[in-house]
Length: 262
Image 1 (cartoon, rainbow, N blue to C red):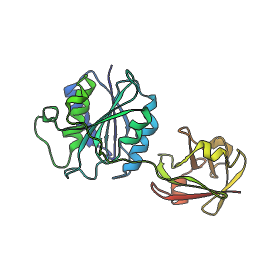
Image 2 (cartoon, rainbow, N blue to C red):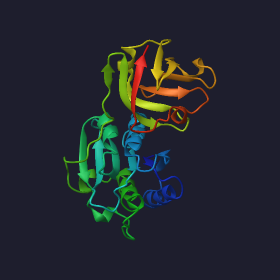
Image 3 (cartoon, rainbow, N blue to C red):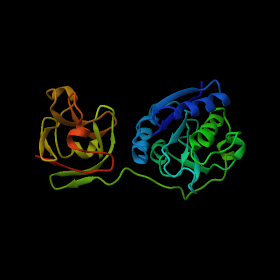
Image 4 (cartoon, rainbow, N blue to C red):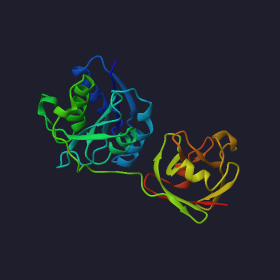
């Protein structure tokens, strides 16, 4: 059974319209909601959500991502094929960098501008809801085996995106926040190997002036106490056991972080 995932900042109502369009084209597809709770216009957060999960999807999966503050402007619509031969996955969404980190994680990419109007919603294209009118139907057609080469022309000047700079500066781990999950855990772009090269489990670090333990998992801190750890996606996280670190530390996507190893 083919799979289409959806990642948006839409909240409620609008994802249902996309699903209706998809099922009207391919009633056999299985739809997986990655999230519809991305911060409004949070392109980097949406990109990280996709990046985190694509390795766990089967070959031929189609990922429709719509975090699209440029909807209705001259920004392009893209379809991307990525991965080794026979294991490819597909991505559909706006040309604002949203799709690129996840696609690049799978390997070699081919990027196409969507211009084939036969694949779009037959009732017309609105200026404000390309998720329903362009991206959902194109994704549905790809899930049925439509050749990606026929969606439009191949392009190389797409908008790129990465998760920012990170590194070590003396005793500091330097990076930025890329995502805050529904638990309030703050996920940074600082990768596991960099962290473990500077500190060990059980050591202390300083986050925004607070001394925090670096531990293996959440339950090793007392209830309500802050901690840092390597999260399930291989990046340094700031958390509070049964609490909300994003609120307590005042951190959100794009914020710079400097974590001092004590």
